[in-house]
Amino acid sequence: MEKLAIHPWGLHDVDRIDALRIFIDVVDTGSFSGVARRRAIATSTVALAVSQLEEMLGGQLLARSTRRLTLTHEGALFLENARRIVADWDSSITGLREDGPLSGPLRVTATNDFGRSTIRPLLDAFQAKHPGVQVTLLLSDEAVNLIDKKIDLAFRSGPLPDSSLRARLLVRGYRHVCASPAYWDRAGRPAHPRDLEAHNCIVLDRPGAPLSLWPFREADKLFNIKVGGDRMASDGDIIRTWAMEGHGVVLKCSWDIADDLNARRLETVLDDFLFGPVDLYAVYPGGAPSRRLTALVDSVAASLGGAHAGESAAGTTRLT
Image (cartoon, rainbow, N blue to C red; front, top):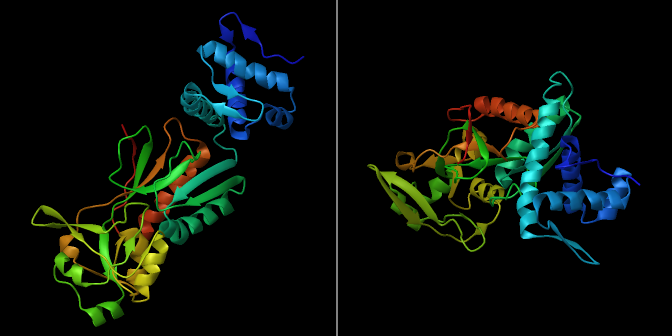
């Protein structure tokens, strides 16, 4: 019968990594037998790997029943560390093969608007250059939990909250009040943010918290204006499209509307009252990033630095 090698004080280093991989696979598939079939090993070997980890850690990682496997509290905490350890190990090994082709999966998330208009074509170009990389793109205007959703890379606007994640500044920008020139010609251009109360403002809707308070700055004083109108949407791409069609006023980041401003589909107002810089970051879990992740971030940074308004910047920071 197959058996993982045992050392008097536990598993050998290589066997530890193998056991961690098996544990992660069990969590992802929800089945000991499924992992065994995929790895072409005995189900007892899968069970033994998990049991040895539990023995070494002194706690139960999985609650087993006849129908399903459930992570215990300790198991959920350990899973995050296990993924990081395996990723660091893989990165250390692949880092020795700097001249080899990039390969493997990348799960990426971005907002609906930015993801469709900018990130999708950049991913297309990246995959054309690196055909061994498989990409999954998750679009959402809500902040996705990178660990829970197994995300490798997120594009987020800052300032960012403190966390164990790492971030690289890509582009400096602002949030602009904008609408189509036709709308401004019809409704008039506001001279002060409070004039927006008389305009049809299109709001990004988030569950329980529509973004109807728009921030501004005047003579170093910060204030909010509550706006509203006849439509809301949970998709940033839709509210931008409505604005271009002349239906109302929106608040959008510079990188979302750069092309529309250049093409005169949108026009900004109240630029003397901008709240402050809103930076765009590439955010990813802590630990050593894979070569393919580093290459993708470098590729996006290079493209955005020349394609969007604002000052581009490099540098990686741990959000702690």
